[in-house]
Length: 112
Length: 114
Image 1: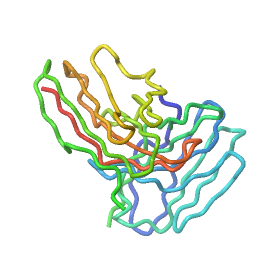
Image 2: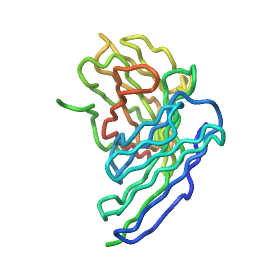
Image 3: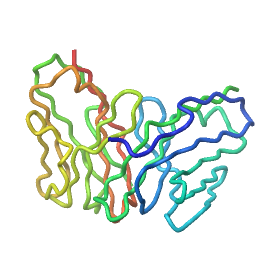
Image 4: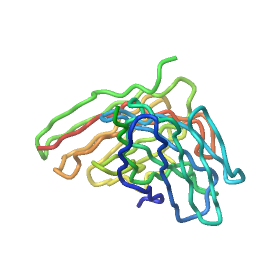
C-alpha cells in the first residue's frame, strides 16, 4: 500500500514559472524525501527533510514539512524544460523497517 | 564510482515463462532493496537484504517470486512463472545508512509479459 499521495497528479507550466507539488502521508515519519524520475529511467534523490525540520533549500528546490498536517510540498523555482519528469515523495517511517514508502507521483511538464 | 547496476534494461517474455533480473549494488552498501513500480504508480518494496539475509520479504509474492543475495553483494530476483500482471519496472536500490537514508537506485528493468 502507498503511504503518500501527491497532488496534483499532473502539472503543466511554462519555462520560468514556479512548480509546486504537494504530498500527504498517513503515519509518523522519520524523514521525507523527494525523488525525480525521467521517463523510463531510475529514481534520482533530490532532497531530504527530517521530521524535526520545517524547511530546506537546495538550489532551485525548496521543501517544507508540516508534521501536524502530515504534509510536505516541493517548490521548483524558475523551472526549465529539463525539469520535465515525474516527482515522488517517499517517507521513511518512524521506527520502521528501513523501507521507503512512495506516493503515486506528480508528472510535471515544463513547456519551452 | 559506478552506481547501482541492473540488467537487463528491458525484457519481453511470454506468460508462464521464467525471468530473472540481476543487480550489483554500490560497493560497501550492505543494504539492498528490490522495488516494483507499476505503470503510473510509485515503487513498492518487494524485499530488503541486510548483507546476505532477507530481513523484510513480507511483500514478495512467494508462490512465484524468489530472490537471493549470495555473498552479500549482487542479487538476483526471479519470477517463475510470469503472469501478465507482472509487467512493471523492477528497481534495485542500495544504501549504507539506516533510517531510510543514503539510497541509490539503479535504472531498473522494464518487464513486459505478453
